[in-house]
Length: 249
Ligand code: NAI
Image (cartoon, rainbow, N blue to C red; front, side, top):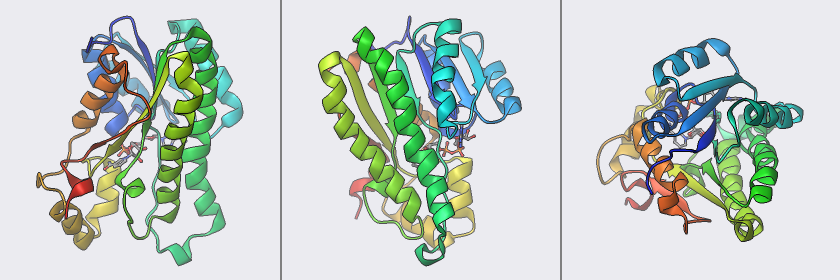
């Protein structure tokens, strides 16, 4: 029940960080994965590491008009998409009063508009087939207030809202929708946010009862579980994978 044999997963932004670790753990669990990203070279290298169960398609999720084409290409070439992982995301740390409309829009477009558009595209097919699992990657920024990330926070709250709303629409058709809310996970994104800001780094670690940063594989393992038949009655949840950070004092 915990394995992913006979299942195909589409993982956006799967060439690096958390997305790559999700791909890795899904492959180890016996699944096939298709990873996407904007640049071919990192995707090629990632697939070379992941082995023959992995494939890639160059795709920018913000190109909403091309998402139907992406899904059609994948399903024609490798079979039906059983699992969608909306992992691709961007962040920007800037005092709220200095964030321009363009900057706000750019984050929302990648982290929320594209997530909805791709979920709708895959969701249509999953609902018709009466089977599927959709995973969002949320954030602690959707659980409590973090300064200087207004657009990112708004986008991740939006993703949490989508989980609740889409669960109502899709569950009658046996399509599950869940989120993982990673705590502070050692990736390029986290390093960019933390390296220049030791006080933020200490604050994050201080309120993490386990006292260490998470590893991308921690998110990968949770993603395997939530996408597997072992989680067949789990829908509409947001699972923190955070070493206790979300309830830390
Ligand atoms: P990362 O920067 O290593 O990975 C993000 C991936 O998304 C990259 O592969 C990037 O190429 C891809 N991407 C960005 N824009 C894209 C676009 N328009 N089209 C296609 N691909 C695009 O960052 P990380 O940390 O692995 O983040 C992955 C997800 O996890 C994001 O949604 C992020 O918000 C979330 N997250 C990360 C946390 C952390 O501590 N690292 C904490 C909470 C959430």
